[in-house]
Structure formats: structure tokens, C-alpha cells
Amino acid sequence: MTARTVLQPADITRALTRISHEILESQRVISSGASDPAAGGHGDASLVLLGIPTRGVILARRIAAILDDLQPGASAVGSLDVTMYRDDLAAQPTRAPSPTQIPAGGIDGKTVVLVDDVLYSGRTIRAALDALADHGRPRAVRLAVLVDRGHRELPIRADFVGKNLPTSAEEKIRVRLAEVDDAEFVEIVGGDPR
Amino acid sequence: MRHLLSTRDLDLAAAVGILDVAEDMADVATREVKKLPTLRGRTVINLFFEDSTRTRTSFELAAKRLSADLINFSAKGSSVSKGEGLKDTAQTLAAMGADAVVIRHSASGAAQVLAESDWIDASILNAGDGTHEHPTQALLDAYTIRKRLHGDASRGRDLAGVTVTIVGDILHSRVARSNVWLLTTLGAHVSVIAPATLLPSGVETWPVKVGYDLDVAVDDNPDVVMMLRIQAERMNAAFFPNSREYSREWGLDDERLQRLRPDTMVMHPGPMVRGLEISAAAADSTRSTVLEQVANGVSIRMAVLYLLLASEGGGL
Image 1: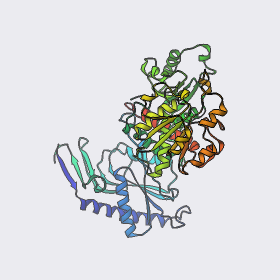
Image 2 (image 1 turned 45 degrees about the horizontal axis):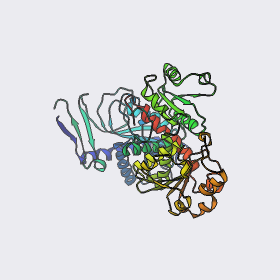
Image 3 (image 1 turned 120 degrees about the horizontal axis):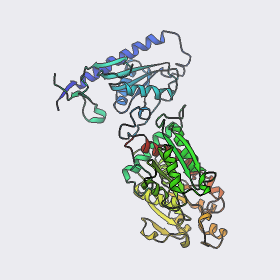
Image 4 (image 1 turned 45 degrees about the vertical axis):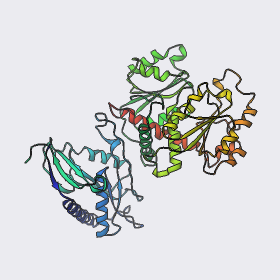
């Protein structure tokens, strides 16, 4: 099985920094539009980053930290487990769900940025959109991913992409992050070496 | 395992796993939309041959929170009262396409019979069989103890070193049996206290300390005291002189309550008979977990239904 590293730790950091700037930029565009009475007030961040477990949560926290440096108090961060909303539960071994943590201010009227490590079929994001609707009504929902590998099965696209990686279906993308894996890289496993 | 028949076959990892999933299920009750789409299109049948309020409604709520379709089937008002046996009832339910059957029956082993038979190909959940087991009750008790001890940091923990004293009608109690196996698996030290007439023969082979004196047990400073109801409906002989004497010797009265630590948990699986095995003050004190047990029961039953039904090759 061949493995080829496509992102080093520095590349991952650079990608997340760029995504953070893009999120802030798009947020300015939104807030310059009609003001939303539900947003703001009491210093609540109007931007909520929700990571999809496991590694999406870590990426969301990292982006939140970068945003906090750029503009303190700009965002709140949490996690959104989508296990119970998946459409492939019957076909797979039982999955243990992970905790969902919605920041104290809730998501009503906020801009929610879903964060995941790899965007593939789009089915996880579909499940996340369903899950989100059960927690409230955000003003807008955006999607940030570290890697977009193509092969979408649903009409879903990412707003912020760390790296586009054209892959074949036989290949696997392996993301490792220092917080949970004791290593940090993104690599493509299997398929024909190119 | 496609069924949940007893806590005796659960190992430590499986038991902690169920409790952890229940933590996530508990979060659903705090949300705006208290429903998950997970078991959409699955059919759960509550097959109750014995009376129940808590367990039946708890399973009903759990199934509905997971979007399963639930049908209540109680022996009263069904063809069972016309003489239909378990086999024909089970085959009828199978023909209706049940994915899971939650069964309560007065005969010990009824759930096992159903699970091992070829009458029905559904997951069987034991909701109490005679004096044998009541696994979801023990799971919700363990969950309640863990939650009181560790709060939000409960995930992944067992009950190592926790001392639990179970008091009362051990002989007829399936709750006691399920708790003895589960709590021991989770690392707790369990004692049973009862008049000798209400202890089953063979209790010396259980992994428990056996005592006869509640005052000694209270002074042993347990972390948890679990009071059991006297199951008069299963008593066909005189097991103690009268209820006043039972209450005086083995009831958790106000005086014994005062001698417990402020953080000792007082548990009761319900239904309580106030003034007999537990005083009103004990039932209503801050030590009492009775209502937490009911609330946690829904989370536990959601977890079990999820683990058994969500995946086609699923199980505990």
C-alpha cells in the first residue's frame, strides 16, 4: 500500500490561517447587508464554528484560535455529532456517537461554519444540516474543509477549502492531527502512484 | 448480541459503552427538537404481560425520541386473555414485521425463550421476567450513580470502589439480581440486606456481602442505599410477621436517614410504598435519586434501542 504525503504540518497551519481570513472576510460581507436583530447583543459572537467529530472538532478549535487572534470575541466554537442522522447506519457496524456541544449563545440567527477534515460524498454534511435544524435556525450555514477530494454524491460544496485533492475512488485520504494522533500530516493511501 | 436479556452477559466494556451512549442520548432532552431520526421506519412492540407504568412509558418515549414506530400490547384487552400462548402472540407480532420486542412477563426466562425460539426474528429486550432480571433498570441505576458521582465528566468511567447496599425483598427482586451482576462488573462493592426469609437460596454464590441488620449496614457508611419494594403480589407465604415490624427493622426511616452521609444516594426502582420500605422524608430528600432514575431511564433505553437496532449487524 503506497502512501504519499500531500500536506505537512506547516501546510495545514497555512491552510487554516487562509480559511480563517476568508471566513472573516465573508462575515464582513454578510454583516454589511441588512442587520439581523437576532445576531449580536450582549457581546455574543455572531459566528459559530461547529466541528464534526473527531478531527473536524480539532480543526474548528484551531480556526477559532486563529480568529480570536485576528479579531477577539469574533467566534464561538463547539461540536456537532451527526452519527444519529447518517443515512448509512443500517449498512455499517454500530457507531458510538460523540458529544455535541452547542456554544451557550445557541445558533439562532448566527452564521454557522461547519468544519470537517475531508469532504467526499457529501453525505456527512447532509446529515450535519439535518442535525443543525434540530438545534435551531442559523442565519446562514457555511462549510469549511481541510481537504476536498471530489466524488460528490449530493449537491453540496464547500465555501472554504484548505486544499483540493483530485483522487480516485480507490484511494483513501488519511488526516492525522497532533492533538489526537501524535503526528500531523495529510496523505493519500493506495491507488496508482502518480 | 442482538438481544438484551440480562446484565450477567455484559462485560465491562459493553456496560460502560451503553452508559456512554446514554450520555449522548440525554443531551437530546435538552434540545429544542427532542427527537432524532435514527430509527425511522423501525417498529418496536411493547409486549407487557405484567403491569407497568414507568418501564412501559419509558420505552415508549425512548422509541419515539428515536423516531421508531411503537405499538403497545398489553395482556389485558388482548387475545392473551382469550387463552393465546406466547408462541402464537410472538408469531403474530413477527408477521406484523416487528424489529424489536420489549417484553415483560411474570415467568422467569420468558425473554430468553422468545430470543432463542424461531417464532420471531426480532431483537428481544427484557423489561423484566419474573424474578430473574430487569437489565435496563440496572443500567439506569448505574448511570444515575455515575452521573451523581462524576457529573459531566462521567464518560468512560466505571464504578470502581463504590459501595452499594441493596435492602429489602431480594428474593423476588429482578432489579436486585440485575444490579448485583452489573454493578459488580462495573467494579462496585455490593451488599444485600434482608430478613433471612427474603434472601434466595444460593445467595452465598453471588458476588455480594450478605447482611441481615439494616442498622449495621447504615453505620457501614455506604455510598448508595437502594431500597426495594416488598412484592406482595409474588408472595404466597408469610415471609415476615407484619408490615409494621418489617418497616421498623428494614425500612429506611427518618432516623436511619439522618445517620447517612449528606451525599449518600438513596435509590428506589419504584413503585415506592411510602411508610413501608421508605419514609416520605427519605423519598423526598436531596439524597433521593428516584426522579433522576426515571429521567435517566429514557436515555438508557434510547441507548439500548440505538445499539440493538441502528445497524443491521448491530448489537451490544
